[in-house]
Structure formats: structure tokens, C-alpha cells
Image 1 (cartoon, rainbow, N blue to C red):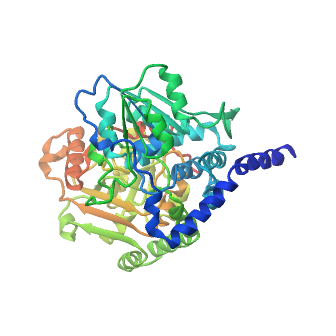
Image 2: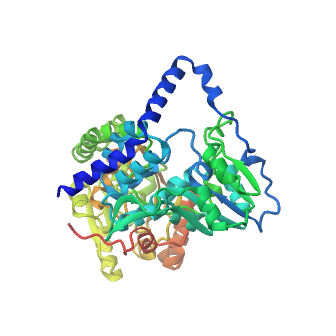
Length: 538
């Protein structure tokens, strides 16, 4: 047992040994710059190569491009290195404790040179991390943040070329899934990590961090790639100098632009639609954002308890008022008592599905108790729910009979997508609801969160409502559409249940501005969690 402490001390000594002189130099330099800010620009060396926006996109289909993800393909206006992405690995793949350790190490990391800083972040993020956790994070969490920060100019050149090779000092397991699945790269050469059984040791393999210019020479030999894209840093200059054409991506791309995101590609231009992603954090965890988040968590738990109490024990109008006061904004459009009057039977509210709270928020908004029929809800969610919830079994006949019984007793809420979707897409609607009643009222739902997502595919689902309610600010926007015309129902219009389901999906997609898909609950869970999405009743 004494070996491990000695090993850690030896590692820390190796990381720090070559860094104290550079750290002292940095401190002195920063102190000098604080008193002489006008001299800061004189220490910046002008780039030897043109900006990537100067690269022509014509006749590039047969050419080979090499670049790095960090500093080239990803836009960054701050000198955080790759810290936010390591924080995502530590928090989403590891634990809150691991993420706090990484954050506490940030002041020390700032004093280290680049190699030592990177190795230290790798060690804290990966030491003892199960390999399966990293595989999940790299395929379901990181792609969303990588897409959000793709540099527009570099991406345009990247897409114009026929062959793309990425050389990076970042651990290959962090980026390879995204690069191959979303950017269709031909090969990824990155830093390799040591494993022990099914766990990472936190140490890099072989000769340490990947040296890009050496790896490029080893990969291509005497042949020169056609295009190289790198950062303005000198070590990248050495890398791209081995290419026929070389371009740099400046960290100041955003300056002088009309919006702060003008150098980042828009959602419409994503190389592949981002429909499903996982993880709890709804923001890129920079050091400052991470500090705010961890300081907020205790208050967030109390806020979630407060919101649950006012939703459970207070009258609807008072609960909505106090929820708005607490930072949870809820709006309802299109609903009046007259919209559901004159119905021969009870009303069947058909909702798009964003979180487990959809039926609860709808019930509070319309000001009357509703019953929710849902799939795979946890026992904890049933206990804290202020309205009656009935768990469906996925047996078509049993579920149909159960919902028919519930409709005879009162108004019912169903979410025919069968699962939640965070992005502006609607999954395929199950047609079962169309066979239950002709008194169908579609409800469109949009949500927004500031800190935590209230859904997960591979995490602890019983925490879903708590995580949503922990957000310091969040919003729920609902739009109630007119009741379905008789001619568009199964009973009154002779439509098939599939026609009705598709019609309702299109109606909600139009009013919400969402794209309709044919994807199902099973597709989502197979993609994100590798299972069918069933939740044990615990």
C-alpha cells in the first residue's frame, strides 16, 4: 500500500521539476504586464503564415489536410488549454469528487509548462477511470461541445478536402469518436493512455505526449501533405511547415465581428445532425463556470426541494407565481376553458416530451389535476409527483386498456414519443393514443436550462426531476393547439391511427419549429446507453 503514495509523489516531482523556473518567469512577466498593459502586445510574435480564411476552397477534393482539433478546429478565445473538456470527462465519466479535485488543481496547473499541465490534467481526469465510462463520454457527451465550438473557417477548409488526418496531443480516446463519426476523418493520431485491466492509470503511453511534427514525419515519410492548419503558437508552426500550404487559426477570430459566435458554425451547418446527447452539464465548464457550479450545488438542492414543495402543497396559481419568483419561468399559450368544453368524453392531452415534468407543469398551467401515463418512470419520481402517474408496460393491449380506464375517470396526458429529446427534433409518435379517443388536444413543449439537464440515458434517472429543478434559471414554454378536427381522428374521420399520429407530430413540429424524425425511444437508448431504456422500479 505504501507503493502508491511514493508513486504519486514521484509523478508530482517529475511534473514540477522542470516547471519552477518557467513558473517564476511567468509570474514575473504577468506582474510586469499588469503594470504595463500597453507592452503586452509587443511580446506577441506575428504569425509567419496566413489566416485560414485566406485558403481557397476550390479544387481541394483530391488533396490531403492535416491539423489538430485543439487550437485549430476548435474555436477558443481563452487560454484554458483543453481544461473544459477534461472537466467534462472528470464530471460526466468520473464523479463530482474527481471534478472538484481537477478544479482545485487549476491554480497549480497555471504555473506549469504546457507538457506538465497537460499530463497533470490527464492524470487527474483518467486515473482509475473505467474504460467503458470514457467510451460513453466520448460518444455521447463530448460531441455536443465540440460541435458548439467548431471554428467556421477551419471547418470550411476541412470539408473541402478529400483526405483528412488529425494529429493531436489530446488523448486519442477523447476525440476519435467525434472526429470519425461527425467529421469523417480518415485517421486520428493522438496521445495514447496506459490501461490496467478495464481502468486507465492516468499515465501516457510510449514516449509521452504526441509530438505532432515528429508524428507527421513518421506517418507521411518523405511525402508532404497538401494543407496544414494550426494555431499561431511556435510549436504548431513547426508542424504546419512540413506541408505544401500552411495556415493558422487565430484566437482573436471573434473580435470585430457582429456577434461573439460569428466564427463558430451554426447548427444548420453541422456536418451531421446532433439529435441525441447525454450528460448533465448544459454549459462548457471553464474554470470560472465550474467554480460557480460547485458553489451553487448545495443551494440548488435546497431550491429543488422548495420548488417541489410549492408545486405539491400550494394552489396552482400561487405555485406558478412562486415558481416564477424562484427563477422557473412557465408560460402557457392557446389554452382556455372553452377549448375543452363541449367534449363528450374526457380530454386526451398529447404532449411533445422534454422532461419528466411535462405532465406536472401542464397540470399546474391549466389549473386542474391531470393523470399522466408514462413509460419507465422511477419510483422516486412517482413519490414526489403532485399528480397521479401510471406506469405503462409496453404491452399494447394492457396499456391501451389501462389508458382507456384512466380516460373514463378524468383528463389524461400522454407523451407518444416515449422518451425525451433535448434538441429541436420530434421523435416518431406511437399511434396508440389515436385509438383511445377522438377528443385529442396537442400540446407543444419547449424547455431551457441554465446549468443542468433534467434528462439522462445512462445516468441515474431518478435524479432527472431534481437536476432540472436545481437550475438557478430555467423555462417551460407550452403551446396548446386546437382540438383535433373530427375528420382527422380515427372514429370521426376514419383515419388510421398512424395517420393521426403523424398528423399530430407535424402539427407540433410546425408550431415549435422542430424537425420531425422517424427515430424511436429504442434508437435513442441504443445510441446513448446501449440498452432498450427500461427503468427498474426502484
